[in-house]
Length: 394
Image 1 (spheres, rainbow, N blue to C red):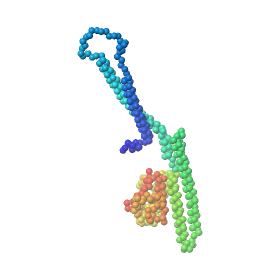
Image 2 (image 1 turned 30 degrees about the horizontal axis):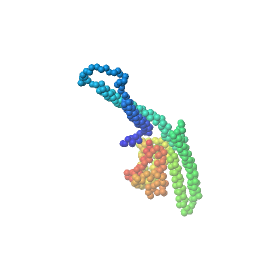
Image 3 (image 1 turned 120 degrees about the vertical axis):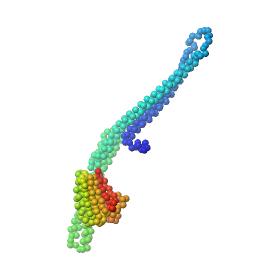
Image 4 (image 1 turned 90 degrees about the horizontal axis):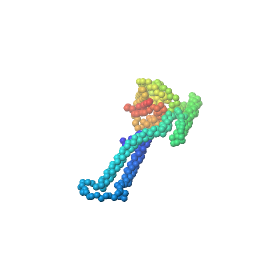
C-alpha cells in the first residue's frame, strides 16, 4: 500500500494533526539549517578578524648589546614559536567551533523532534475543537429521519463557514419537511378522492345493471365490475407503496410467525384453485419491530406471488427462523440477471406474468416495506426452478 493510500485511510482529524506536525517539522528544519549556516559563517568571519599583537618596536627599550654567545643548534627562535602558537590557536578555535556547531545541531534536532510531537498533540486537540461542530452536525443528521424532520441543528457561535453550512442544512431540512408533509396530505386525500368514485361506480353498476338483464348485457356487467375491481386493487397497491415509502409512524412488536399463519390461511383458497400446496414451518417465534399492517401486506404479496407464478401441483414453502423469512416455490426457471427487474414497479419477466392478473407491484411493494423496516429482501433462482425469496431482519 502506498503512503498516499495509507494516509487517505486515516481520519480527517488525524490527517490534520499530522499535517500540522509535519509543517512544524519542515519549518523547524529550515530554520535550523539557516541558523547553522549563518553561525558557521559568522564565527569564521570573527576568527579571521582577530589580530594578534606581539609588541611595538617604538615603545620598547633599545636592546643592550651583549657579547655574542654561540647559540645551541636545537633552540627555536621566537618567530617560529609565534607561528606555532598561532596555528595552535587557530586549530583550537576551529575545534571549538566545530564542536559547538555539532552540539547545537544535535540538541536542536532533539528539541525539534520533541516540539514536533508536541505540535502534533496540540494540532490533534485544535482539530478536535475545530471539528466539534462538524461532529455535532453529523450526529444530528443521523438522528433526523422522516419521523422527526422538525429537528434542526441550530448551531450557535460566530458567523463562519461551519455556521453557514449548518444554516444551509437547516434550510434543506425545512424543504424536506414541507415535501414530506405535502406527500402525506396527498396520500390521505388520494385515498379518499380516488377510492370513493370507484366505490360509487361499482354500486351504480350493481344496482343499475341488476338482474334480470338481457343475456348480451350480463357479460358487459361482469367485465365492468372486473375492471372496477382491478382499478381499486391498483389504487390500493399504489397507496400502499406510497405509505411504505413514507416510513413507519408508530412501530410496535409484531409476531411475524402469527402473521405468516394468518396469511397462509387467507391464501389457502387461491392456492387450492392453482393446485399448489403451501407448507409453513416455524422453528422459533419471530418477533420484529414494525407496522403489523405493512408486514402483513409484505408476506401476502410474497406468498401470493409464489402461488400465482407456480406450476400446477407445485409447492410453496414458507420457513421462519430467528431473523429471516424464506419463501420458495417450484415455478419455471428465472434467469439470475432478470431477478432485479422483479422488484421494479410494473415490471414482469415474460408473458407468464400477464396483466390480466396483478399489476407488477407485488414485489416492489414488498421491497419498499422491507426497506421501511430496515430489512433486506432478496431473491435468487431456486434449485428446482422458481424463486427463493428471503426477508432478513437486522
